[in-house]
Image (tube, rainbow, N blue to C red):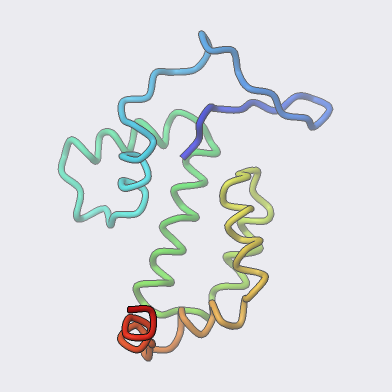
Length: 131
């Protein structure tokens, strides 16, 4: 998720924390992403502990987890009506990776909303077209 933890300076700029101040992460970034995307009831006890540790490292890490879980819930439950609220929360956060993702969603928001709402998809057609 984060390549490095960041701390805010009083004047609003951001700078990377010194390497000796960064906690050693118990997992690789890719593993952390999978933990963030999975439902809590799907996690093993060890994965739950790792996720709890990751969330406790930094307030932005905990906020990122909550926002990712909200988005995956919208996706799984087809709740596109919550998209505007979610985008507003992301834009108020200080998480550049999620803000960048939200900016991409904003470019074609109605299509994303439709994808988060309708049960119909063109997956089979698209597969044959690009074959």
